[in-house]
Every structure is written in structure tokens, then in C-alpha cells.
Amino acid sequence: MDLSDKGIKVNRGMVKATFAKKGIKYAGELFEKNIRDMIEVLKWNRDNDIKVYRMSSSMCPWLSEYELSDLPNYRKICILLAGAGKLAKETGQRLSTHPGPFTIICSPNEDINIKGAKELRQHAEIMDLMNLPQSPMAAINIHVGGTYGDKKETLKRFCNTFKSLPASVKSRLVVENDDKGSMYSVKDLYDGLHLNIQVPITFDFHHHRFCDGGLSEQEALQLATSTWGVHTPLTHYSSCKKTFEDSSSKAQAHADYVYEVIKTYGISFDIEMESKAKERAVLKYNKDKHTLLESYIPL
Image 1 (cartoon, one colour):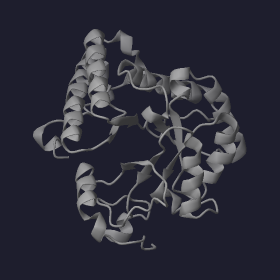
Image 2 (cartoon, helix red, strand yellow; image 1 turned 180 degrees about the vertical axis):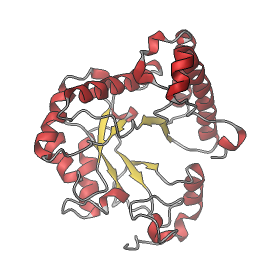
Image 3 (cartoon, helix red, strand yellow; image 1 turned 30 degrees about the vertical axis):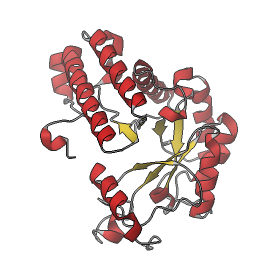
């Protein structure tokens, strides 16, 4: 947020009409600007001791409509991405990405799964150009998606599509628990996905409050982090906006800042803060954590 006030941003995009008019040349120009500014973000992270960063999944506008190698400035893109990855490695930053809710590989409609698989492959391609590890340490994080009336069959379709993905995706893909009781809890993901395809589970603390699968927070965190093997688990954290900032908000809404101490239960893991105030929330938490609430206040 501080950098965006200075015009530095990594999500420059365009509407469909503009893409139809200006095409991939303009998309490449925007992508190049986004990468250059991401490098500035990584420098800011270095200077402020931030070690975990989620890259924007929309750095390259309308990527689903073409291949990266089709971009007229592809060689320059490759050089910039390699430089960004080198900076992240040298400064000990763990990078991840979180494709949007329409990146689905478990639909009864196979065309949707094919499109979702392509988007995952392209996210992995960007990470490969950055020389990021082909492991969950460079996570591509997604939700399963819908239930389509049958959780078990949907999870089977997810597993089947997963098996057909390239190694660059399979080695990085992780799944996250949902924030609706009818969707996927950590237990659902463990039983339906991890036991079959060994995909790691990103534990989202806030989501667990609405979809616990019969597990306590500690039990769910322990189960999720057990799926990461030798790799440091990744988690998501945010406070509840309805509880702490705006009683008229939806219960699932994320607060601007974190208002309670993040409980680790003696487990070591990395955290992506999903607070709306972004890096300001991280810095404030690090400053105030010794004076915050000891436990979460129920909704």
C-alpha cells in the first residue's frame, strides 16, 4: 500500500475491449511494467524484513488467451523474471501465488478443467522463469472450487486432473480450506486429496471458523501442517472484520488489521497475512503483538 501511493503496482490490467484492440503487444508491455514494480516490492520486503510474499496472479493480463512465449517482449520478460527470482533467493523471500476462484480442475465440465489446468501451467511457467523451486516452497495455492452436489466425486475429479498436470505444477500445487460450512474443511481436503495425491494443505485460520470439519483450530492446524513433509508449511491469517471493525460486515470478511495473537501451538510455519491493510497490517502486528488479545473473540 505504501508503494502504491508512489505509483508502484503489480496488477496493471485492461478490460476485454482494450485487449481486443491492443492485443498481446500491450499485454506484454503491462506485464513488463508489473514485473519491474514487483522487483521494487521485493526490495521493500528486503528492507523491512518481510520474508513471505504472494505474487499477484494477474501480473500478466489476459494470459489465458495466449502463451507467454508469444509476447513480443518475451526475452526481456525472461530476463526480468530471472532477476526477480534471484533477488528473492538472495534475500531469503518465499514467493507464492494464488490463482483466482475460476481456476478449477474438478468440474463435471471437462472444458473448464482444461482451462484451469492451462492457467496452472502458466503460473508454474512464470515461476520456472524465476528459477523458483519446484516444490511447495513456491506454492501455487488454490481452492477446490464447487461441490457440484457431491463432494466425494468432485474430489475424485480433482485427483484425476491433478495426475495429468505437468511436474512443474504438481510439485507446487497446494489446496486451501474454505469459509463456508457446505464447502471443504481441512478434514475433507486431507481425506479426499492428500491421502490420494499427497497435495499439501494451506491452513486458513479465519476460514476454519466457518468450516471446521469437526476439528478444533489446533487439531486442524496440526493436520494441515502434517501434509507438508520436509517443507515449511504455509498458512493464511486474518482477523474478522465483523468482530473487530464493522458489525454490519459479513462474518467472512477480512479485517484491515490483526487484533489477536496468532496461536502457533508450538508448530513452526510461514504466514501469509490476508489483512486488507496488507504490509501495514504486518508491520503493526510485529510492533503490537505483545499487547494484543490472547485469544479470538467469538462472533
